[in-house]
Length: 524
Image 1 (cartoon, rainbow, N blue to C red):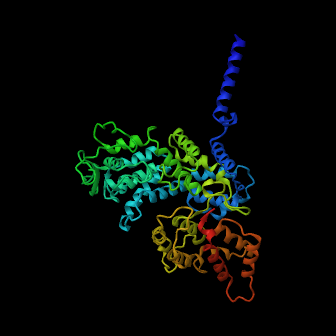
Image 2: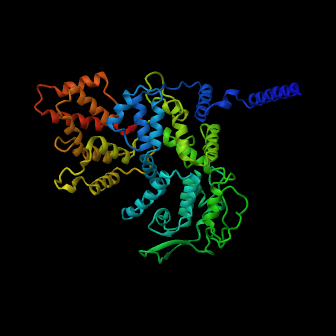
Image 3: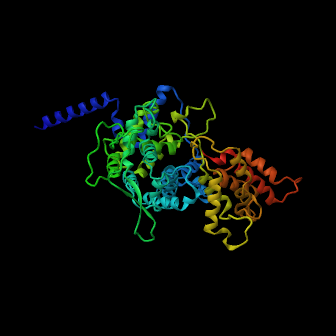
């Protein structure tokens, strides 16, 4: 009996090894971590295309990248110093974990999603409503709400029209056409609106697909509410329909790519029908679109790029990898934080963006990290934290000059001036007007003014040597220490005996130079 058991076990082991080999996998793959599996997919593609990956990034480059990606701000100088001097071999993993579990991560994610969800032309008088949406999103990310639940709560939102997710609907005037286009782009990664007037010229979408999808939003209306504070509320009214253009044909709601209508809802709540389908295994788009958007956030471009053009005419650069990430997200019950954790632990995320030898690999190979330009909020928040040090109003002497209200006012004005809603993360988004406004704007004047700059004032402390001052400037502005040549040049300027400026004025000049370098505007 024992011999039979041993033979059975041996045969089973041989069969399992043979099955793995037939599937093109080694037995080691079965025990690889998800992060290792991602690296394996990329390594196989580099082998096929004879692409040489870049080496591992230095600690300063990685620290700046992780902070900007996960916290939305450059690392504080004191934390950067501590990270650079930490001898621990696992300090990068600890940094990732501390950022993912921090409130900064939730705030940054809420800001990113707020920008995705609202149309670029959202008027300034809706900023209070936009702030309500951002507060709602921040709570979801603080609570680590599963992505399918977050989207479900978002798409089935009702109640007062000036609270939380309601602005998604009211900013688009509750128009089914606009809502269908935005929903398909954001949550399915599909530009379904290209089939609004005629069948899509490249993808499989037809006019029927678009208008059937728009029918899910046909019931929305605004009505007066008896809730506290009055105002209007969003609700769904049964019986409202959309019609096919230039005809009397009523469009029944239908999921994209489906051939039959959805199962009926007891209360005819179509948005709930749509939400249930979005997170179901019968939907081939939802998890793939979410995984692709997270990848694009961390690596500068999507496996499908642009992220909202996932159709047959625009295939992914690494189809097996994208499917693996989508399956992983479903396995983890749509835990976005876990997907971020897994991807930031890959070797690919730790590669340098600097190429010193040979030709730069194609950006869609991900053999080197793609450089990402900072959003306006990332630049301002980094400037505020490390250079302005809380000083917002150069002209005001009142105690209110540095108040939270002053901060929000200055920040809001800066974001409006630098707005570039269509910019991709690896493109330089600002035109001449924005660049001149940055170089000569009030924030830059405060950041580099001798008597207003918190950073320059702190560097006047007598216990700082000139080398210390220059190193601190580089850490504050570029998140790295200066190179030998840079240190020599900056010391020469600071100690120029022929110059008539004060030491503070010279520090001001050097700060202005660093804050306006291309390096200061990017996440490496």
